[in-house]
Length: 245
Ligand code: SAM
Image (cartoon, rainbow, N blue to C red):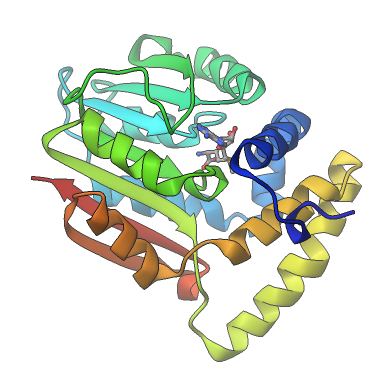
């Protein structure tokens, strides 16, 4: 049975997502490298370069769906270990792996880990200089609610950056990518974690996510200004950016 071919309600979708990430938490980082051929590192580095975090202890970033900490760690390093990042995730298993990694890297002072839902952020309005979310928003059942929450917690002048899988816009690449994602990824997932189903779900969730233009429209509807996107690797991933002005 495959998750994505059923119609599921919002609550049920979140349960499925939670189940997936509880199962994969320990192997999540290695699977990222295997499934993207290491490309996720390049995309994440590009995202941090676009953010260009301030080298300033008062600079506060909220990294939502932060999982095992990849984005937050990069932000802290790029700020010369001055900025502060709050890593928020709905899944305690992912945060647990992240907290362990943070300890090893000596980054705990710059980080706070928070278990919460992107649809209901436990923070005051106007609290953060930047809101980042990488490969997370497509898992959130109500994307419009998550974007409204992003807008609320950002300060005026704050920046939204969303890195997500998107629509491939190169004619040959899309064929290769389809073969890779529909066949290879679930199989690799099974080889490495013993379970193909979580990866099946992930691949299907990518297909259902709005394309570059449609997602940009959703971000504008949430109130953001100067919304733009940049494709990475022919649109396999895209970085959307917006400002709360
Ligand atoms: N940002 C990390 C990265 O790029 O490596 C992790 C991305 S991982 C593919 C997606 C994460 O989204 C998981 O850790 C999952 O628990 C989290 N997530 C799913 N639904 C969420 C929600 N409603 N609120 C917050 N986090 C959520």
